[in-house]
Amino acid sequence: MLKQIQGLHHVTSLASSAQKNNDFFTKVLGLRRVKKTVNFDAPNVYHLYYADAVGTPGTVMTYFPFEGARRGRAGTGEVSVTAFSVPPGSLPAWKERLTGFGVSGVSQDTRFDQNRLLFRGPDGEGFALVEAADDRPGWTGNGISEDMAIHGFHSVTLRLADADATAELLRFMGYDEVARQGAITRFALTNGNGAQQVDIETVDAPAAGQGAGSVHHVAFAVENRAAQLEVRKALADAGHDVTPAIDRDYFWAIYFRSPGGVLFEVATNEPGFDRDEDPAHLGEALKLPSQHAHLRETLETKYLSPIKD
View (cartoon, rainbow, N blue to C red):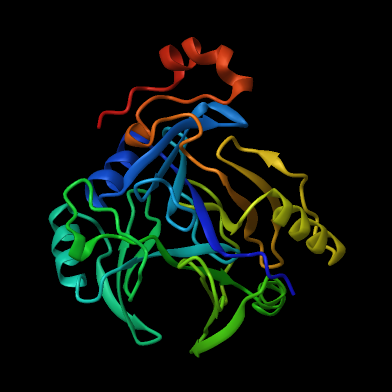
């Protein structure tokens, strides 16, 4: 069993509009945009990162906004809900805020004795705010007070046709089964980074189709490249088809497809989002990976419309 995994690192999804996506995460949820860069494999598309003050692993929601992309089709083999941790007692204030911004799908329920506020993102993606005791510092920018600040990820829900093989993988990655509620099983790390829970929901449904609003991949955190190499070897030895480590400028990444169909990544905590920007000005300038630096003028004039803050 692996001991290097610390919890979630980031969650990356697809969107249909960079401006609408930016407005939702900064103006509605109040998160900080900590990086404005491009998709390494499609540099004519933004890669936007939203998080706490510094982009702490376990707080980072990222997006590839393909302008005008068709909406994805919900189903199995995907992340159906990305949940954020908020202070106990803050859901009424959040409900009022989300309703005031015209956010769709706002409803409330309880999962494993924790109150949740469910809602939809601008492309129909599923989110939840979960009241939880959380000692991670919340981000209080963009009109969000400390008593309702998001502290980072609480969990992700994997919606699968068959849970067994993915449950076995999570156990191999260091997770323990800690609770069951109907068709939902919760897995958690004993000592994680605060974003250390994964729920599996088993449903009888067709496979999901990726598009705007779909989660592209979910990333798990390790401390450094040495730990990542240990994880990669263990996963490969266990029969998983794992990519080599790829330099993503702000972390190193390896990828593999989980048995249930969800793309998993293991990302390093190093070097962080301040490697090319002052912490006071994260996410302000367009940062390009070195292999795409020569495209700056073309990208800024032809493909990447300015994002209004």
